[in-house]
Length: 297
Image (cartoon, rainbow, N blue to C red; front, top):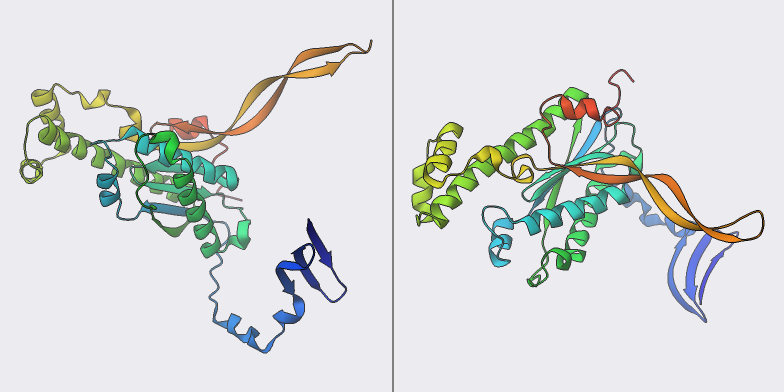
């Protein structure tokens, strides 16, 4: 049996009957002579009226992907797991208005007016990182049924503030441009290795100094691949946003005559939805105007 007690002396404790104490907290303890050590803590409160972006990157994921036999150039299982983990973070921290991910990274954007964790950067970053990492492990088997997780993955994080809508959009555009550049290179590189039999060193030498047009030409002339027809999730990455969706459920309802009947009930719920679309142009932002807050506020 779990018991919670509070006394007039400010002591709060939680214990298991009969006398096994799990943890306790006392205001008297906070006033001990050791309290001065709190002065060494650094104030890391994020500046107000700025979007807070927490970006996570997989730590040493090249080795992780090799040991877990990720498909080249893209493993849809791994991308799906990243997205599922990011969705878990958004569902836990509802002040995240948009998230963007590609490869082994994900960026989470907290709204400008957010007061979660008193806007402390360390709290926001560690909560996002821990929720994402634990979700990655928790949902692993849903995406890698026959591949055991050999060791725990790691993700490093950073916090960056963006004061305007333009700054934030340029940040997301930068990450999406990076997605396109890397995916085009990797697509050509692994075609040269897997289908033409080049070594990785030879493939690197072949692509050295080439531009995007050159890579597209190699794909089309040598492998019959039109890069424009490649999967959007690989070229554009994944964008997660909140959207309202109508849900219809069957509810047992008692009628005025006393009879009970199953009746359909429709209600609106906020859900995290995934898009694989262009963030650099205007269309996405015009279709979802509620993501960004007014710069004049």
